[in-house]
Image 1: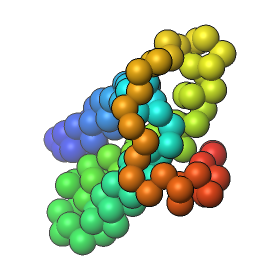
Image 2: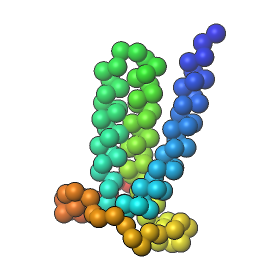
Image 3: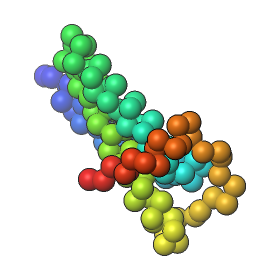
Length: 111
């Protein structure tokens, strides 16, 4: 028997669930303008998965990276949901991210 598929499915389920959690928390504590950083992390993980010789570990890295890319595109929508009152807004947010002027010129990604 090969349990790899089941393990990969459970890992995917877990990382997607964790994605919902970190998107909500990141938007609450830092704001949606931090979207380039999880996007960059996701792209690095997906790119790194290309160089991992083991297919299982490569798939784990790819799934994790894709989840971070999805989360980066979801931060703006989470900010909108917070404005609508579906989630709490943080009145005492942390300072703006590095390179804020550049980030504000780029439109946030949207799926």
